Image (cartoon, rainbow, N blue to C red; front, side):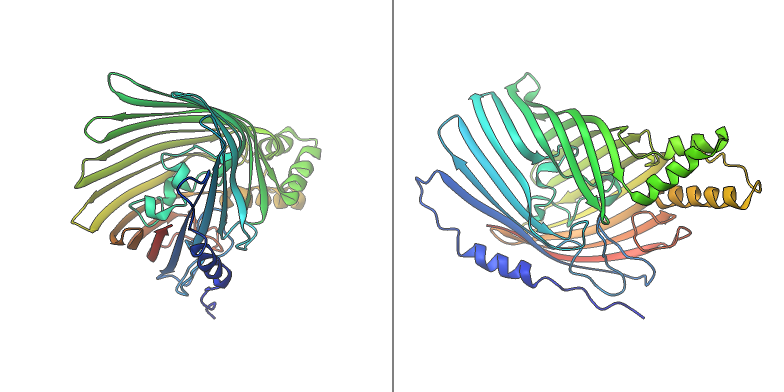
Length: 404
């Protein structure tokens, strides 16, 4: 029996109406209010499993969903003087707890100590990808959503800490360099994930001819707060057989080294546009090592921009060598099966071909339609599917993006 369509978005719509009446502000006011919203609808041709963004509990199948892409964000910036300012952003979208409760996405103070140098302290967008700062602002992106094969690798979108941003002009173009430290957390399908001791950098070079190069790297300590996984790890470590206890060490999800690196290239010369990113995720726990990439090419015809994207994520290493002997005892057989289940549940290999069109209907409103053909090996990024799932799935998406 199919699930009913998910259009539980009344609170989101009411918030949009409330914010629309709050835009008036004086030209000399130190406060600046802005916002963005997406109303989306997503469906697939499959009745098995659901298409969802990373961390979400509910997605789309043959029963269409309005919860995959719909969101509302509001932002307030207060400027004390030429040096000091502060920004707060509140975002409502389907989170890892399965609701749309508004969350503070940004809340930082900024000191512009020199025209080329600034410092920020507080909660900021995690700069892991080329469009990290505006990945949730649909209107700012050509696609209906960032390619999941790449952006689905990291469920973290913000961090608490500090950064330094230096900007200068070079012989090649305008350079922006960011150093940051801090910690972050996210909820992935009702499981808390912490990323602490974060240290990273992010560099962007904007060159003539509409070409932009971006490189980034971050490392830290990853913790997945799963009672069942910790219980399995403890049980494996208690077995006085090296081939068993060592598997427990590999599964241990507490404060393990993790890193993420990426390089991106964007080209926009007016009519034609192209975007490319290549990323690598590496961990010292059961979360697998992956490499991923995407390429998008589009062309503007007045208010219409058709585009095409190809993307892929491949698993490089599961980081778990299940050496538990088979047939030694029913207990060991059960432990081996449990480990295999954990590893299979983390397998995220798939490739995607997508085509879409963006229509800039109004100055601040864009309407988008997108078709994706996804070929996973195993579950891929689909949720509520068996580990043997490998169906090719077509995903249909519509969205209205706006800024105000």
